[in-house]
Image (tube, rainbow, N blue to C red; front, side):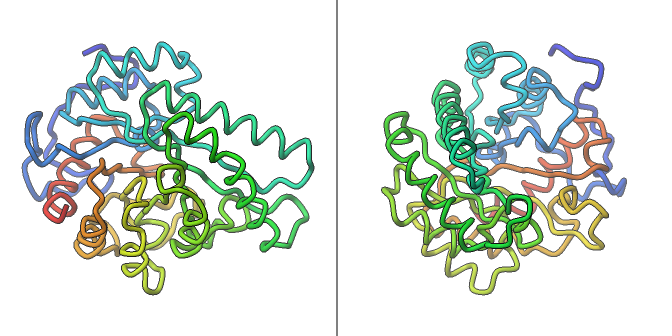
Length: 308
């Protein structure tokens, strides 16, 4: 495997990232059937380049990856697609499109054009889903209902291109702490209300445990989402929250989320796709990427995979 300055080979230290506690189980190795649906969202190992992330997945035996547009742009879509194809990795999703809530007509046109490009990139990479972050309130704007309407209109405008490219627009509801700056769509119920206005092969929802675990009646909403779950993403809600709420996601098992009931509900809703581990956390990012991957494979095999 090629290595870069921040890359380490997969040495099993026997300790979890970021806690430093002894691992509760051996690390699954390449070929272990428990890894068959595990995908590394690239932000979980944020210091890895796309090349390093691809190599890290291959070395650890992960069959899929969820790349981000910025690292893809650094090498070019054609090169990235070739690397992914040669590595034999599935592309579980492409992050991210969206940010629909701008007000000015010129800004809205620019956002639309950017999302058309994102759909093209997703199709070129072989990603079935483009994850959509709805966007927050523009500076000085306090009308959250109008912002949600603009997001709904922008998604509708993208549907013909999504159908043409064979890519599902995955609306990601975001925890209410992000409603002002990132995501005015706060619940899975709201996301489904938007998605159900369009064909299921054009618009779906992203079920991210971090964002929706708290939602009253969420398991009923997961059941309602049958046929529309475009992506299942897992990470943990930890307390106390770090000062930067954006970096408050933890490693599965280090917090408060019930992965048993959540994963069973997603499976019962008919979802058979990859499961992405997406963690934004400064301590996780500071750890060697391969050790992070070793930890998440163990936690996935323990907490998530048995219930798929």
